[in-house]
Amino acid sequence: MTAILDIGEFSLSFRTATGTAHVLDRIDLAVRPGEIVGLVGESGCGKTTIIRAILGTLPERTAQIGGGRILLDGVDMIGGGKAAQSMRGRDVTFVPQDPFASFNPLFRIGTQIRDLMRWRAPGPNGSRSGRSPQIVEAAVSAMLDAVQLPPAILAKYPHELSGGQRQRVLIAMALLPQPRIIIADEPTTALDVILQAQILSLLRRLAVERGVSVLFATHDLAAAWEICDRITVMYAGQIVEVGPRETFFNKPHHPYTRMLLASLPEPGRDPRVIPGGVPNPLHPPEGCRFNPRCPNVSATCAETRPKLSTAGSDHLVACHHPGAFDVRIAHA
Image (cartoon, rainbow, N blue to C red; front, side):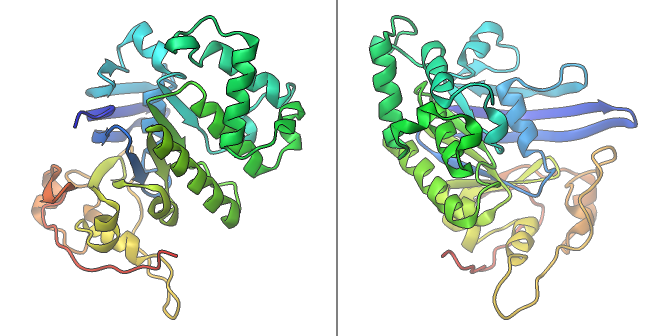
C-alpha cells in the first residue's frame, strides 16, 4: 500500500554557537492511508523536529538538511515550492501540544473557525472557492457537533474555554479542510487523565470515520496504546523499531524498546530506570546511538549503524543483536 507520508533516509542538523547538532540521522518513517501511527520516544529524541520539517517551519538560518526525502502524497515537501506550500494547512493539518497558544486571544472562537473555513476548507464539489456564508455556517455547525461542542462556543474567546474544549476546537479546525493526514504533537500533554482519554477517543473515532491518517507524536506510552495502529520508536534521532501496536507492547525486539517498556511503573515493584543518559547531539556516538547504554553492546554496535530489518509481520528493528521477550503491561 502506497504511503500518504513517506520519509526516507532524512537527516537534519542545526548550527549552534558551540557546533553542529546532529538531530536526525537517516530517518525512515511511513504513514499509510487511514492509519494512525505513533511516533514515540523520550523528550528531545527528534519527534517535534520531524514534524517541523513536514510542516515547513524549520528555522532557515540554522537548519541544515543532510539528505533524504519527505513526500506527502507524492509531493516533495522539502523542495516542492508552491505545491508543497499549498498542501500545508489543507492536505496536512496540525494539532499542537499547547491549545491556548494556538489561538489569537483577541478574536472569538467563531471568527477564527470561520476564517479557516473560508481560506482552507474545500467548497462545493471540492473546490477552494465559492463558499457561501450558508455553506460555511453549515460546515462549522456540523464539525462542532462532531467534536461534541455546543454552538455557544463560537461566541466565546479562547480564555473562556477549558483546556479540553480548546483541544476539541483545534481537532475540529484540523478536520475542517478535509485533510489526508493530521499531525498531532503531544496533543493531550496539558490535560488531566480523564480529559486525555476523552480527547484520544474522540480523535481516533473521527479519524476512522473520515478515513484520515494520523501521525501521533508522544512520549506517553499509554496514549500510544489507546490510539495507534502502528508504532515507530525513536531514540536520539534514529528510528530503532517499527511495528503493530500489539507487537510493540508484547514482543519488542530492540533493547531500548524493551528497557523503555520495563521502566513503566507497576504495582509492587520499584521503578526501573535505563542507565546512563541520552547522548549529546553535538557529539553523538558512532553506530547505534543507544550503544553506550545497551546491555548487549558489541564492537559492531559502536562502529556500524544498524539498518531497519524485518523482524516479523510488518515489524522492523534496527539492531545488530535483536531479541524478543515477553513484556506485559496494564492496558487499562
